[in-house]
Length: 270
Image 1 (cartoon, rainbow, N blue to C red):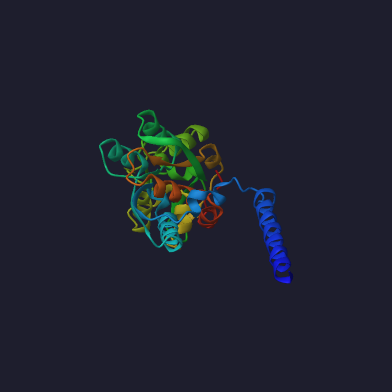
Image 2: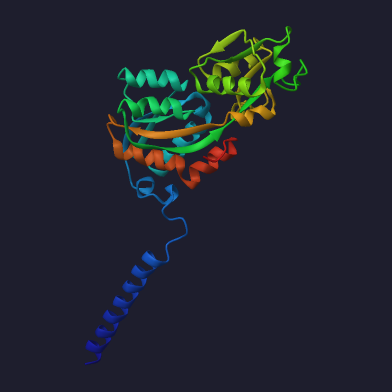
């Protein structure tokens, strides 16, 4: 009788404990549990290999995020292809094998969505603004956009189809300044590289590019940059060979962990 009673009591206690855990999981979920940081696909035990096409301005942060994601998911492998967003779109439209696309603006992502190449709705994950990159110490004494029009200043910008080029056009319009660059590049990293190497006195790049240059350039902020805030969306592509892993990485970028890395790099919230 004692043994039976003890077993009965143990069973009852186990049932109560199980009910208590179930209640906690449904009623005591942490605030914001529906956010990307708690997404099941971001936390799932995913594996496989995907290729992420990402804007050149994301190279440093996405490389870090890729390594962190692989550490969290030992069975997963993330490869990257970085270039100007417009060039990446062209490659995808021409059949380049990509699983995820992260653009430096909404316009280039819309090109894929309009041709039914994106799966579902892309999600915004960051914002960015322009800054003037100059040689360390700012030897030309540049303080704003007006100084970029001087005859003694060799200016480099992004080409118009590239997101940083479209942003440049917006700040020109907002400021009334007519910029005359000596070169228009196909990616923001090319613009930065010309300033770093001394081939240009100044270049219009993103705040994050200046911060990530590790002292190789100085940055000159200007008020008109607020008129051209670029929003960065990320999306899984319809032809992805591993949509589950692709979605998991996309969710990871938008998670609290991913946002921490982006914020540290100088990106703004979406």
